[in-house]
Length: 163
Image 1: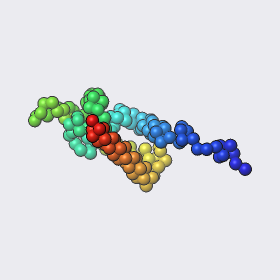
Image 2: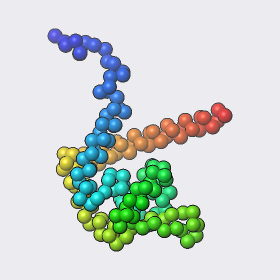
Image 3: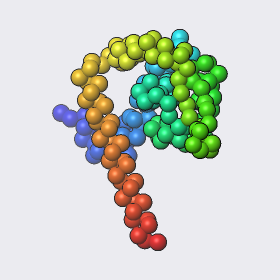
Image 4: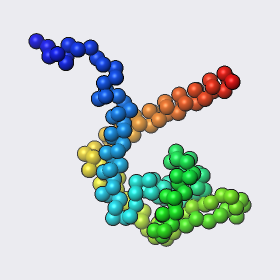
């Protein structure tokens, strides 16, 4: 005998079946889980992302950091300012073009990397996910981002050709 829920037709607008809902809740939850791990090093999650970019690439122009993080430069600027206040980074004007602000790690910021190296493992434990699961999740999210990018590019192309 079936339950009324099983007999009911699938509702395409059911909240729990929406990818946007699942992604929003997962994003808030994971970022919230980072809070406890990042507090001892005085970083917020967005600041941590800036530090990750700098630990990986060294000195970067503010615009490049914004592009890498898919944020507006106006959003990245206060993050970098706070990191400079913490003594983790310094901002300098480019010698070739004074309009360009370059961000580099200080000695303290470079040393912080050693402490931060434990964060991915701590987060895997906190989220109860192993390395293989993490790789699979990352691959899925990367494909999703690429699909959205391709869709937006196609929409932009179509809008340009219509005008």
